[in-house]
Image (cartoon, rainbow, N blue to C red; front, side, top):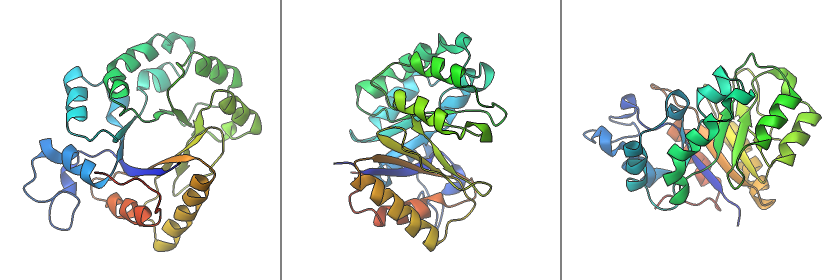
Length: 245
């Protein structure tokens, strides 16, 4: 049965700790992930965009989370921002995946997010050639941040490779959920979500689940924000969502 996996973008933020915050006072930062995994069953790993994780870090992620937990790494900037999907980055893809292999082997590797730069405009041939060389058997999502990409022909390319068109909901642009893969990837990035907003997202996600779409939803991380409040509320609106053990 399809379900929604709801979590946050990142987890290791000291300002999230204290009275009326996410992490209890006195909790060691080394225990943040273990505690996080009791609340949510997935996390978006922004840090992978900056640097590849060490073998030790990946082993710790696995040790601190239950079997059903899913990590969603943001694809390294060498691929998305430095090479901008050109062929010279193809050899770096296996390097990235080799570092994440223990997550895959332990069943903890969720979707990988390919977030393109805002100034990278539409290039169908470059996109298709890049997606064609990606290994199969993994879930890939791509976030376009230039207006030119939002065309039916681009959606056709994504469907060919079962790549999810990530729906990024921001203050500047409302999310558009496009069915380009067998799962949805949602990034809730607005500065504020009221009850009506969350009710609307709950309905959209419930409808997608009813159509057999697994949904991965990540609420915005802000050092001083409280994205877990939105994630907690979404979980109450999705009775079919798996909860963390």
